[in-house]
Amino acid sequence: MQDYDLDGRDLRLLHALQIRPRAPWSALAPVVGADAVTLARRWNALQDQGLAWLASYRGPGAKYVGAIVEVECTPARIAEATEDLARDDEVLSIDQTIGGRDLVVTLLCRTDADLARFVLDRLSNVAGVTGTRTHRGIRLLADAQLWRLRSLQDNEARQLESSLPLPVAAPRGISADVEHQLAGILRNNGRASVAEISEILGISTTRARNALSTILAEKRMVLRLEMARPYSPWPVAVWYFLRVPATMVESVAGKLVGLQEVRLVATTGGLYSILMLVWLRRVEDMTVLERQLGERLPFAEILDRCIVLRTPKHMGNRLTPDGRRIT
Image (cartoon, rainbow, N blue to C red; front, side):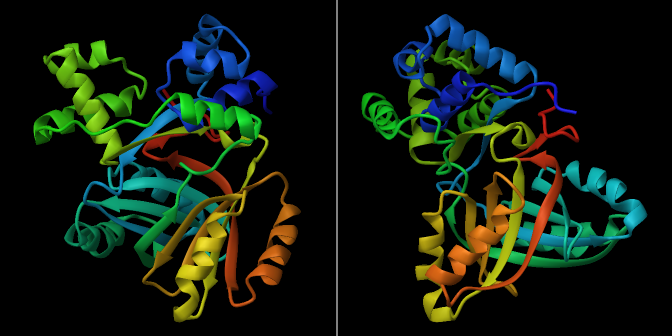
């Protein structure tokens, strides 16, 4: 049973952090409607309870190979297989689903060779796995960086965007060692201050600030707000597997990006042309969404869909059965 409900102010705070994850509390206070001390205290409480956090991962500015793997398991060993896979750094997320597959696993590998090793060698040694289907990502058109809670008014969101400019890359680059260490800091604490980063890395605050701005501006690392989905106004997650004529893939995928429910849209080199993940308020809303897709995008054929039951790992973080981050 859920023992906590996110209230309106919480949702306004989280929407603001979706727009600018590292914004000073003093800058968010006028828009959210609470003083900076209250916002900081509320954020710490949400983090401590595992209800909201900042996730960090390699972005399009870094070299990586993405893939989504459908996994079928022996029913009695789904939990065992999930736990085994969750230990791998290449495994970004795991969804346990009902439908045509038991698990949907999102991979983030450094090279195609690493992807091949994982799919051909690693997966074959996971106890309980009886079958897999891998979809190598071609283009990621949208991820949850673009998805919004819609708790702020449009003018409030625009105010935040205009008053808090995005990071700008420094003229001089940063070393691979500093980037690696900084990425580790952000994984542990996405809102670590420049002073904290400077102290941990043993460099000046100016260098720390420039390194942070560069890695974010060039999207070598991405920071994004995450929340425990079952506690949100959109507790239902559904994967869609679509087939689209080759000449219309980019057009259809681009239109999917604009749908409010969409968290991820990717074109792939597998059986399906497009994979899409959505969050919905109710299971019944699947019918509404699919009717809209049929009316607006008649060339997009839904080959399959599956509802997410649990997400044991999400964006590199382990979650409890009710979706909270394990700290």
